[in-house]
Length: 436
Ligand code: AMP
Image (tube, rainbow, N blue to C red; front, top):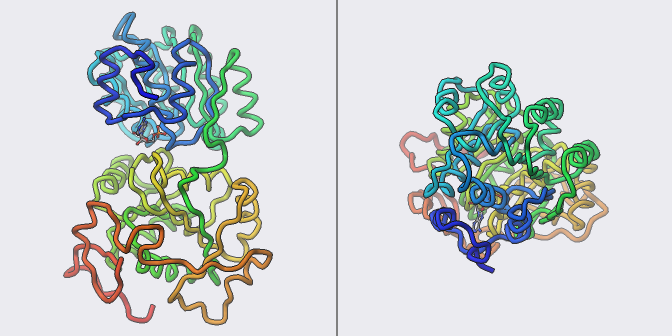
């Protein structure tokens, strides 16, 4: 199937070309015809499936006719990063049209948002809190909104935004179409969807089961204190390119990023205590190759759209299966392959079982070569499992010892390890202690 089959306006088609998309992803194939036919859509899909373009292309198509400089489409998203990312994607897709979008979120001044609203925009992409501020202050008129999109509805619910969403809905009285996207369908989300959608067409892509292009491995670790050693051993052994490392708390993210930086890796933290500017700097730096490792918390990492992430490493086990799904959705995006490694202590056994139930498969239990386990026997940590698979460092997963990522050309191999990559700052980076 090709995009030309949707018969988009030439200016919208030009945006697809500008984005470099050649064939529609499965969710685009399913959702675009329904949305263009004016139907409400319930999209069960996680990020990484191409869902932004799935809803935005038909919106652009609709907005190419009719009045300009009034808000005709509203996208509500849980985090600033996701709002910003949708805005950026929209800017590319709408480049040849006269349609403009503005991202609206807190943590930054209101000035630029007010200016854009005054100048007039057709698409508003907003996080709930700041949007309600603008509504209260009379800065924004949503009475002309024709299409409402709720993106990552389950996450908005997790973050306590449901009351805000219902408040916002009251200010969008004349909408003709509602598009509702969620990776999972807990009860309160199902209720919200049935309250606001009229005869929706349901499109379901990779619901719950995360990207099939990702392989999942479990690395038992004797205790919390040894996690950093295990992580460093992993980074030494595996041919990684860009890696996102998830921690449970903001402090752990900050401290771990600092430790990694100290031993010579190009690492940045991404966590909620950072200002919006610093968060954006971390994301941009990661995207552009200034950082190879991003140490993030779940919420801060929502909506990061960085391609070519080779590994997601769960330094800490996520709190929910949903969080696991979202984390590993950072790799294996757009049909690429990726690996998800999870470090697990004994207390994580229950969550491992939950994840396996949802994935309908076992996480492959692995022992890390060259890691000093002492008396600890990894397979005894999770005893009711199949045989332990030995990992294949240095080029397992077809990576042939080196990442194909172009940014790797600057990496500085040191010591004996193939696939060992470090920051290009050997003069300033302290030597790692020989006996960690
Ligand atoms: P999303 O699920 O919207 O966050 O999109 C995930 C990634 O897939 C983004 O980097 C998009 O630019 C990319 N993408 C979306 N649609 C396509 C397509 N048809 N072909 C290739 N890449 C795409």
